[in-house]
Image 1 (tube, rainbow over the protein chains, first blue to last red):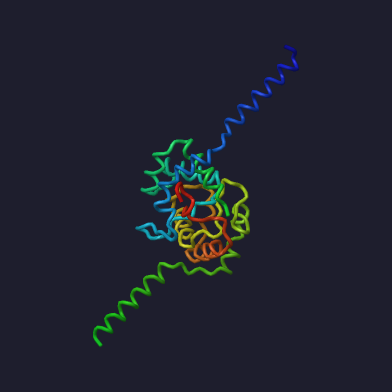
Image 2: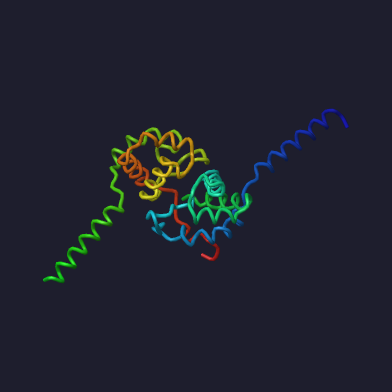
Length: 107
Length: 116
């Protein structure tokens, strides 16, 4: 193999690795996962109790923000009992899929 | 008469309580106070960088709640804590009123789940 071919192969490998490291979430899988979320986030004006405030609109929210928020609930940077419990049940892949789906819903 | 009076005072109490729940910020003042927010969240409240949330059209009282949470550390975020530190309760109400009044790309999940 010539040096040029080797270089090309190395570049292709690097590209492929970068692409998979920056994995896109699967919207269809996300759509299935958000079934649980809709219990609160799917009811317009639904309020959190103690303290009382409306749960946020999350359809159309930005992708990386959703990922960061769910990881924040997992790590305890965000303290909310219900969201903490929900986030614990999600894998990193689940979170990516949910974020991909929600962000795709921007009006 | 007595019953009417009781009913009336009950109604007055309810009205007072719900007025308290509804945030009473000033949109125009909020627009001025929100100038620092625009760098990340956009003047139209739709952040371009996807790591920052869209605020346009989000629920007013939710924005008030989370601004207080960032300020008191219940939500631990260094950037937002710094931004929030100098805001008064009235500032928070005004800023929330401004962003919630903007045209939105957000929605609830109603109609967006499997089977809908």
